[in-house]
Length: 101
Image 1 (cartoon, rainbow, N blue to C red):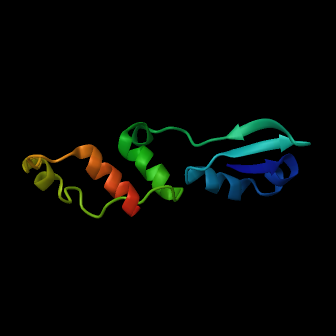
Image 2 (cartoon, one colour):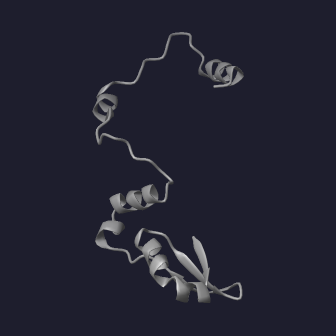
């Protein structure tokens, strides 16, 4: 979130509004005390999950996969592996931890 003083807001309103258009919020302060917040208006696009992902992507907090079905069908159609006879899950977990996985 960008923090701007009142005088900075008056002088740079256009650039601050441009940041808000791209999904960022701006907190306006007067002598270090918050007085207002500029936030983007939630549109129908922003209300759904895809809009939220787009906002997070613009903020650099996530990166989407390149393909919508990248392996999804393969993972869901493949049955899970069967456990080995005599296998001990706890021993396998502790061994993985010791190896630093």
